[in-house]
Image (cartoon, rainbow, N blue to C red; front, side, top):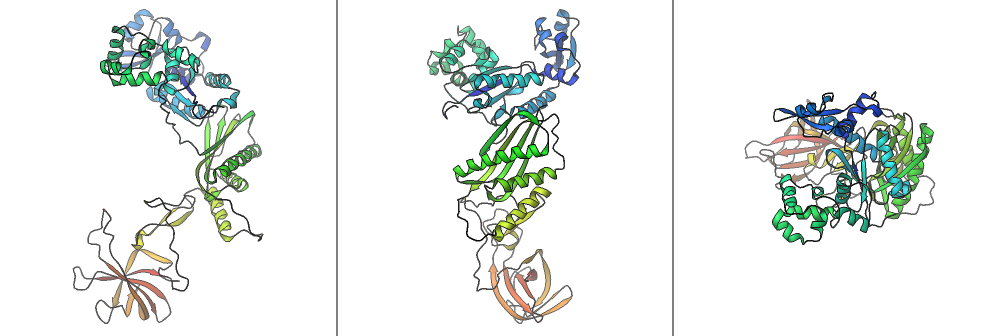
Length: 523
């Protein structure tokens, strides 16, 4: 396994991606007797070759040539329109399938992939085994490739596209890069031509020169590209999918198709993932299972927990619930030959000693119930209330999916519910109306508590009143509702013993005149 500083990158180049895609779509073409085929696109009003297959390249045709010149050289060539969007869609599918080799994969231009395979080669019997596995996978889906494994992504790209490919490391990598033409820097045509006219034909002619004169004469981009291609700078790739906190794989000798076998592999992966989380002092909140099919289809299924968890058995039950209630069932086809379990969200979870009581706490029971309902009904079907930093009642709470982690305010601390004094009556009702409902209220003296109010044609005479609790508009909010007045809240009780939460919006003597609203009902 490579050390942390000894990173390894695999460049996968598909030199014939458009024509390979065309062969995949037709499915009936005999590869041993493939006709010369070119793809054309309109450039400045004329048709030019966008791509050519191997048979067409052998006839001297090349991308960029006009269709008229191509037909003059080879009258019997087969012409098809170029569809870049189809090539992009195919590359995306291949990227998803090649995620079986490493979770850190990204597209590299319109015809290549870049894989960070640091620490992954041992899963395939070493770097040579990894190269063979990637090449066999590409050949199995009908794509021609050239592969290069090097210490930086730019060096691997240059060796794959302008060299012979292969495995390079240390001095061998340096010598192979020095033999590449200056075109490997992939500068503009003008800059490449200027380097050639100056007698700088290969990277060796540039490698031994100071970079400052190169930057002054040929531009800063030339010096930057030279350092990156020669492996002096390691510009990490940006994976298409976020890198999981914990990731465990299982490469299966024989493909599996039965649900019990799939669940058994998930259970084994969960045990290994929980051990890694334990070493990190964390518990997972989102677990994603990846299923890689023999035909290249990839499916990801995610389950979430309301609290951080390292309970493999509990998470496995959630996966069983999720698999049994998928809107689009998991189709194994010819079987899954690889499975991956990733922990995408985790929080700190300190180990704690269990008490002597046999039954779990009520909070644990509620958390497990929420997790099971979420797995069975979907992440958006089960919601919970979350506090928000606001003293304005309508903005102090919101509904979010129950499995989402708690939010944090600007200082990074979790927003928690306020702890009331057990000796005090509840300050807020259990049921709050949104928006508040208008009522007719009267008071003995303006600006005094109400003594009666009418709501839904029922007259409520009040016997007890607590308040006021004054809540002013939040002046720091950037977007304020127009003329949002100050509120005076009262907790009141009528003759029947029913308790309400009333407020007066505005003050007497101001415009507009104050109004009374019912904002909630106490239990």
